[in-house]
Length: 340
Image (cartoon, rainbow, N blue to C red; front, side):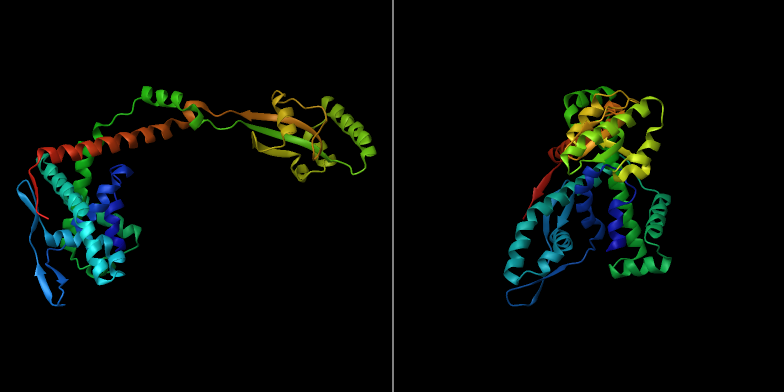
């Protein structure tokens, strides 16, 4: 079903929150008008088809409902024993029928809006599908045949899917506007959510803490001499390569950008006390003796760094709300009779 499923995701014309209805719309795209064969208690084949819902001037049949249930729940239902299978189908009838009603209403709304889908749009969709899955005309045809579809049937269902997308775009998505003021208000009310920890770019000369405590004084004197050399203008990175005992010595003592909380507390405290470009006096940590240079510091970047992220979040929230409201409004204005 790979090629068929691509109908749902292609031409991402609407936001991801509408994928709920698009997933269910696959039922309509794949349903072939046939009567469903349901085993009876005597194991004989019984043809069943009847109207299960009227939606304005259109009907939904039992075979359509069963096609939807069997398509979506095939993996689960195939594993179930006969009695359990009947029970599961019964539980799925009403929720699946509700979705079919919603989709029928949306297609009716598309006709009222006089929306249409041109042949060129369908051709472009098929070309994208062929490109995505590296399909030739022959292999695409074979994939469709495996699903029981002709190319004409496939184009018809693809047309319907694009029409559904256009309808939601026109009725819901096009009416959503996320203003800069709303973004700034959301940011100010949720700063902690979007704040990133400050990062410090540190270069260090490091000496391991000697096992002999009596050697610590001599090591400190040596480090102080190196610190004085740096103050006199000697290159920090060159001195790090020559004297440092840490693994970063090969990189001139460069530790890169460290987010606050990721380094030794003593190192962070010393770095935070420095201005960019300044070098610390030698100081001890549980690991050993350090001389550090603060080369840069980065803050959280403020609202500009997360503006697009907030805009998308607010859009998704607005879409979900407006989509639910639009669907409810369609139902309120419609004549719907359920005959389950």
